[in-house]
Each structure stands twice: as C-alpha cells, then as structure tokens.
Length: 147
Image (spheres, rainbow, N blue to C red):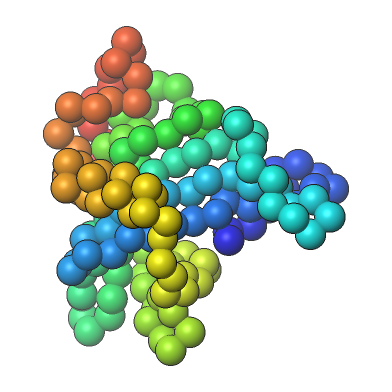
C-alpha cells in the first residue's frame, strides 16, 4: 500500500501496488483504494490506475530499478513536452528480510491472484522497458520521446 498524500484531504487514499518480478525484469501495477472504516473500497476512477514496466540493475554495488509507465487510466500527464510513456525513472532499491523497498514503499512476498499474475506476466512479455512508440499515451497528439 502506497499512501496518496494530499489526494483528498480528510480521506485515506492509497495505491494498492502489485509488483511482479521475474529475473531482473518487473511490472508494477498501482490500483487506487480508499480506506473507509478500516475496509478497502476500490474506486472506478478516483486516484488513477497506472502500470509500469521495470528492470533491475546494479551500479557501483548498489541495486536500482528503472520504471517506465506503459498503461494508465484516469492519470493526468502534463500537456506538451515529451511522450509520458517514454519517460524512464530510476529508483534505488533496498532488499532486506522484510522485503523489497522501492521509493519508500515496502513490497512483501505474496501470492498474487491467478488473473492478476496472468495479466502482469503478459505485460512483462509484451512490453519492453525501452519505449518503441507502439503504445503512446495519446495517439491523437503525438509527442517526441523524453530524453
């Protein structure tokens, strides 16, 4: 669970994150949820859905992950500029007995539901970390790739 700070004051919104890792490749899926009276309530649109394609790598003995958005719904990216789905962001990764921590979010080992595992595995096979232009954020308003 990744807290969505300042999203809607007075309410507790989170992204429920699922991270599928195979070898040094990954898919990170973020689904918005609100906590109401201690229970999760899934939203049809609030908070936005976003999925990233990732790759782990080592540099100077430290572990990192590069993430690129590959799919989104109800997410607003800035207008103009470069293609949002081409932007790769790199984060340091900490691995401990508690789990894997990426950008302040701790991921624990868990068994994903069969349909979730299938969908994330399919994205892992079909989407490269490198942006190819095949699936732009907005096909009507093409933008150049980010540098």
